[in-house]
Image (tube, rainbow, N blue to C red; front, side, top):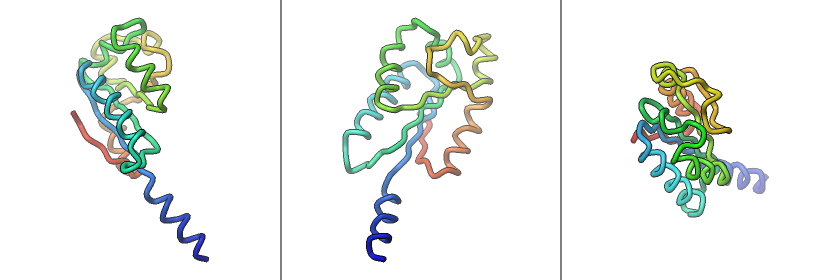
Length: 124
């Protein structure tokens, strides 16, 4: 019985984080933040998601300057999502994006969904 309680307590300490970003520089900050969260046991980060909205979607096209930072984040386990509304407004097709970036219909609703799922979220 005691072991079961301890297991439940340790599971509750595992944390999930998400950032909503709208500029290329915020994407870089998000990757740096993820690196620090994953490497510091104080935060016990198990999941980290970056939701990219607004003008930032223009910077996540394949072969863009930000691609190395995105790939570094992916290697750490960061999930990147692009807002479908922002893509539509910028006339960017999903197949133009850096491989591995998933498109969600609405970035703001994605953040609300993550909050419902227990993520700590911040909009930069």
